[in-house]
Length: 107
Image (cartoon, rainbow, N blue to C red; front, side, top):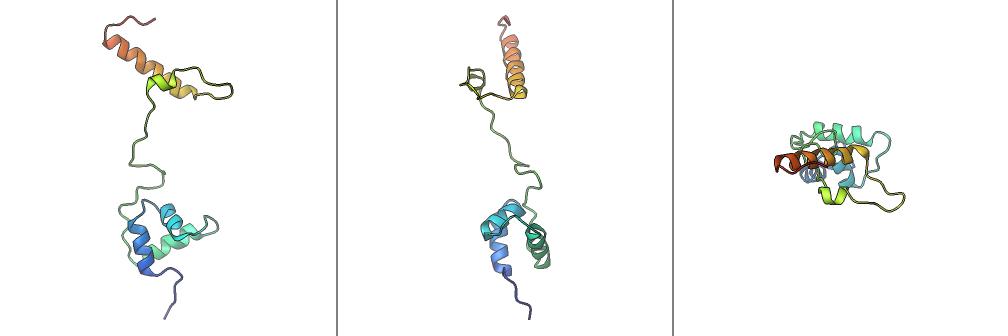
């Protein structure tokens, strides 16, 4: 009889509460080094544990990011703190679009 460090019950419970293999590793207290990711993936497959609810490789795939409102992006920041240019551009384009939709002249 083969003895496993992580029983099928432990893996099934961790997988049910997780959205990814990385979440399973965190719940089991396994370090992210060596082949631990591959090992746990193989164990989940070996025991036939359902992982269809996992969201994929991207950490927030399937979820939506929370965008900050324009009023938080378009303010002067303390020295050394900056907002990435892509976020500023998106905010300014959106502000210009909203202004034209409302009939307000863009300055």
